[in-house]
Image (cartoon, rainbow, N blue to C red):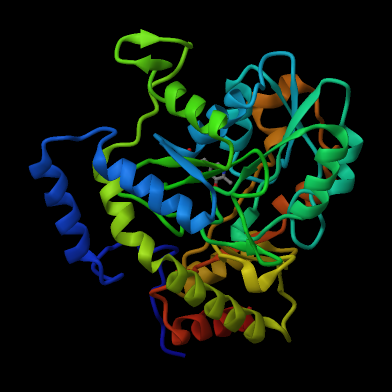
Length: 367
Ligand SMILES: Cc1ncc(COP(=O)(O)O)c(C=O)c1O
């Protein structure tokens, strides 16, 4: 078999065919002389809200900030508990901690690896104020069940859709379910900038205007600080680049789904089990993750054949050193812990060819 070099990700704008559009966006901003929270941010917020189908979208400096500002704007604060998934970028939990609330980790479903509604139910206490379900790897969690439970228990839902731009779940766009949705524009995301960025989506006018104030130091008007806000402003360059890319998101997600289905078909008769989205047809397929009892050897074998692979995520949030003080020991989230020891993420991005996928499948079949 002829060897190929397949990088884990390919962020080169030339390969996505967008270098000219992005260059035009950059020069538009440079010549405007306005670089933070200006017309590009305003236009992008409007366009992104239309994409998600919410009335408002408010840009922030990162996805982490989007989560914490959404929580603060909905009233979460010190003394509250917020239930979330341990199998996520630990930034989800850090964002909860930043509000002063305590993250509580419920377990994930064994096959989709998304937050288990049953497990969340067991974690609810009189102090629980909100939940932050994560749409992991671009695929919706069981948001219907979680949303129903939240309504019954009068809890807030803040969706972590940081990996799920443009994804749907049973026909409904993710990021528009709960009190607020949150997204990251970190460069590797399905919709990524040339640096950090994030956004809060919501149908609630009050939440939107509070996030708008909080991201800008709590200023209600210039130099008048109504709240102890933060500096989490989205800059014009990121917004202009994201505007150039947004019209391609749907086609990129479609191509990711085609490639993911090709992986699934190719791996069907092997011992590798792909993580199964609850609603594959709506998934944005941010990552393609397989399960294997020998992840370290599988990754070494892939690397020997020119294929980069990673693990998302090797340490569940409840077992991170930063969260030792919470006392959620090993064994408290068995499905997440088992997953962390048996996962490999394979390359998946729109500019990969069918032949690239077939090559990775062949390398895995040879293992
Ligand atoms: C699921 C999830 N939540 C939160 C974040 C945090 O986003 P950011 O890196 O933009 O702060 C990320 C990205 O790293 C993520 O993947």
